[in-house]
Length: 205
Image 1 (cartoon, helix red, strand yellow):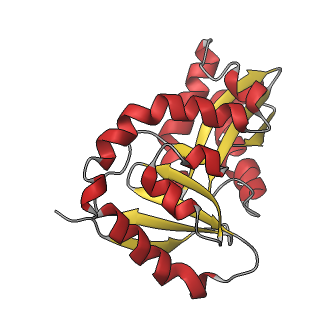
Image 2 (spheres, one colour):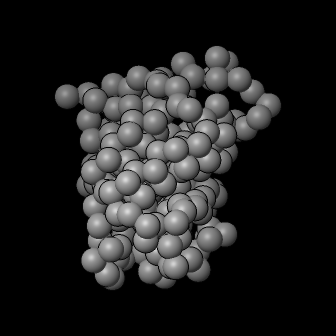
């Protein structure tokens, strides 16, 4: 079955979500530099387009952030066709398998290159029952909605009432992310877990 792609807008005006009819990756990967993209030929080809600022790959979609000097109406169809063509080229018929092999190393490399690398690398695995409850709630209630908007959310740490989360893809730098944090995530965690939760803050991935 050939790949087909359709485009969806996201709450972030800089980011468009390109959804595939087939799985693209088994984990989420963010590409914020051309060096990040070099490991995966398809991503590298997209990143080299002059209007592409960053790329987020997750499961069956690719979220692309554009530069400010061009409008989505000028490039959406071009990007959709470009991605479809690349996915269906014979030279990357083993694309999905390649992604699965590279994921862990790629994620580690990408994390090291972000401004928040020290925070993301430390404490991202829940260590207490409360932290595990936080992660469970994020996965059950928040992650599906965030992925639907072309982004991702990951637990970073919990300290003295403050929950830190990592936002990626369309959620990173989105104008509405503050409202999502306060009215959505923070309210949910306080409602479910009580006064131990004081606030939720984001670290852009």
